[in-house]
Image 1 (cartoon, helix red, strand yellow):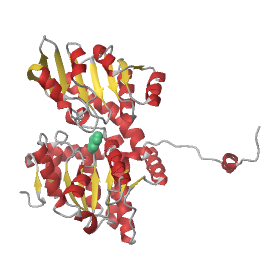
Image 2: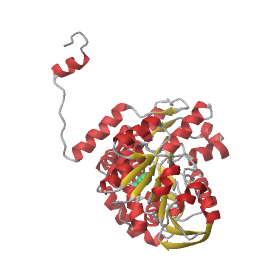
Image 3: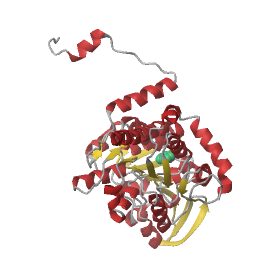
Image 4: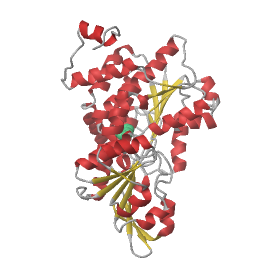
Length: 426
Ligand code: ADE
């Protein structure tokens, strides 16, 4: 073990130099988070706080972890998906002294073992992407909520949905800030981040031409919307499947065809699930797919495509290229599954670009800081899911714009008066 390193388990510490260069690259594209890091490095407002994180180990996440460390926190980390860890980044973090338990390709048992290791430092703050860390604390260490944890943050839509359900049932034992619901998170990360990184994952694992292909996007939430718009930009004929009337209508007016998955299955060339729901593509859809259809998922969990169904239907299976498995069905049709049905953008590519993660992680940093600052004043948020303050969104957007050298107008006094005046009409 390296002299400076904390307790860790990563694939190969020798990859640390490569990881450091990747982190440096991300850092140079994350000016908002970096400004926070520089600002709080002096005052160390997180001194005495122990943050356990369970979030994809990427170069962008490493920039966030560095900001926490520079602000005085002790950090312990695991990845939130068995296939999303960048081993070089994990090695660099381990070498820098962070307690990290993450490697690419771990199994589910190892996944929970890693979370357990991060809990050994008895965190008082948690940071999740998908809420697995919070669930582990609630299920296996319920006393942590009383003894140590003052609050947590959640990064993703799926996690926030589940935590809101938990709070509604009165089962959430500490406050959680819904970072996902910040405008400077979902309106950028979920839309442009998922849009670009999902296509990046598909292209790295297939290198297919997307122009002229029927690309079926299941789910037209923020992520689906981003994927559909980027696929359309590359010349694909986008087909959207939905359950929500307003979302289906939006997709239609955006120029996409909307139909049921049963119909889409017959004509699609590439299928991308982005719903947050299980069994979106099952046996009956595989039955009607064309020979050569490509199937992948960009939702948080790997249950959107029923791979067990496909395994049962297949005569044989082989890896045709990295992150791309060919299932040969009886009758001779071939179906290609990318990244085993796990998040294709992180498992087969590098996740969202640094430029959007900059704002998501600035929100994470400020939310963790908010929980610590309240604690220092002897205060604590209620045990439910909280939105970020609207001023935080505007501040992050303002700083981001200034780093892009973009200036915006200001309301004059007369304009301010006009928009609040209800005394005059036409
Ligand atoms: N989620 C999606 N993209 C990500 C990234 N680059 N880093 C961490 N989490 C992510």
